[in-house]
Image (cartoon, rainbow, N blue to C red; front, side, top):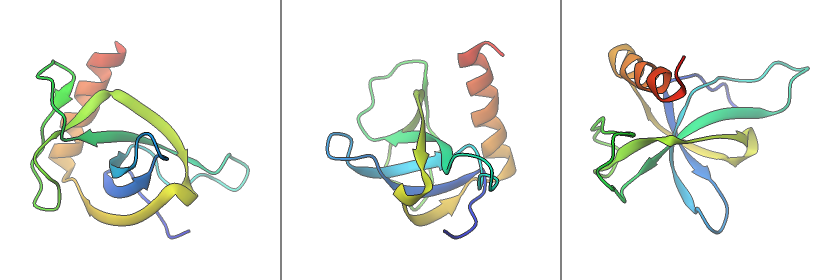
Length: 104
């Protein structure tokens, strides 16, 4: 598994029901003694117009948003290909919105 870092966006295989879709890595490579998991935030093109959709346009993503209600941990073997990464400012927008969502 190549090194992965928070803020990167990867194609992730979520299985038959959720398909392969872009997801933002919230965590990086797990340590050797940890489970082989990363926590991700799904990107969706099926917008509903609710407050938990955060749009951050990137040239490598279809128009859509990161859905702050769709946080998941997945095995690193599900990461298929890196698409790109968010800037520090964009990642801070995500983290601020997640803090609001999770009431941290």
